[in-house]
Image (tube, rainbow, N blue to C red):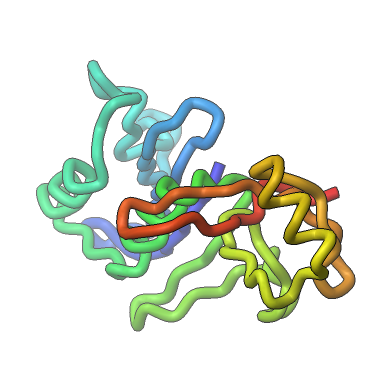
Length: 167
């Protein structure tokens, strides 16, 4: 699952908001954890799992829940969580700052591929391109990374290839 984290305050008390995409179960989630919860109060101010239909809620729903609680989070959290669902990304941990900057420790350097990235066909050999064209998927070496690639058809046009996992 992807996890987008933002530390802030609610009524003068520290909380951590987590919004993300649960890849195996295919739904967005949100929790707000009290960081100084007293023994007689729950650790979580909010959890989508406390909702009657907690696994079918949308990002706009969570935006409304945050507004009702008076908690503001960076727009980047919603944008990135939506991108994670579109690309079916998991195993991603991103810390967001109020100014919209992000820190993603798992992205060790900017030129490393991640699950969901579009693969440039120019970076592939003739044999690799033929394999992908014939099967619609395959394992190819890009730079120093062996990646599993699948054909993807975005709604706006022709096919493209995306990283699906790593070898």
